[in-house]
Amino acid sequence: MKNIEITTNMTMTYELITPEIASNMLETNTQNRTLSKGTITAYVNDMLSGNWDETVGDAISIDENGILRNGQHRLNAIVESGVSVRMWVCRNVSSDGIYDNNRKRSNADQIMIMRSDFDNVYKTSRYISVARTLINYSKDPSQMRRMVTPKEIIDFTEQHKEDLDSFFLNMPQTTVPKISLAVVHLALFMAYMSGVEMDDILAFYDTLCSGMSTKQEEFPIIAYRNYLKDTSSVSSTLLEIGRCQYALKKYLTGSCVKRSISPKELIYPFPYC
Image 1 (cartoon, rainbow, N blue to C red):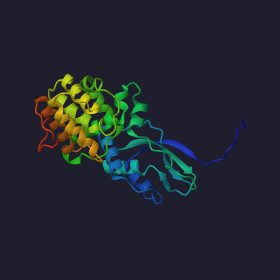
Image 2 (image 1 turned 180 degrees about the horizontal axis):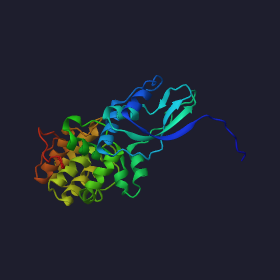
Image 3 (image 1 turned 90 degrees about the vertical axis):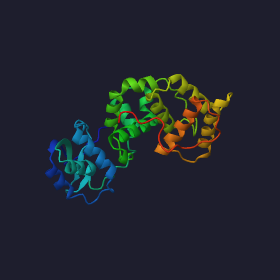
Image 4 (image 1 turned 120 degrees about the vertical axis):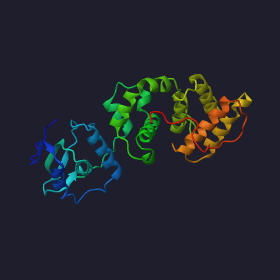
């Protein structure tokens, strides 16, 4: 294969970007996509907590006309946090190039790259959704929908690995459409952390996924399964967490209720708060 020589004036330097330098760079931020406040907040949290990774090779890019082409979220986070961060800076990039046109790495992608030693269950979108909710609620219940970074998820997983392993490594990883949802795993993990036996949780989950009931005390599980089947979208809100917990509690107490409701308060509280 013949090598093709390309002449370029691009330079790449590893620099300490102070809030003042970041602010100056942002003055030329005139041709970029709309800012994501959630992304900036996540970056600020990492910078303030010391979790920002300075070894990532993704560069701040400035074109041949001095226009900022890539890195506006990181630079805004430096300004907002007041923290100086070392970053690669690439200057004199093409002003005609197409930027941010590739698929963004998901949290699952990032965790798979950063911690290949983690069990596969911790790289699934279902677990990541559970971890995100637990992290948000432990930090600030009023901000449950803020962005959580892969580094936060990794740190959370490492910190609570013993609890998480004893639950998630024992949970079946089969996927049942509209049934084996993140909110179900979250609600059951909260119950486990509140003292519910794993065998009882597995029996509940097996009936929920299979839909096969042979006992009257399983009526609450089937009622909850029917609710999930008939609902277009179920997210990890307090109401939905409570609904799953209600079904579990009724099953454990031998109640034969045939309806699915959401209690006014969670039966099993969030751990780590």
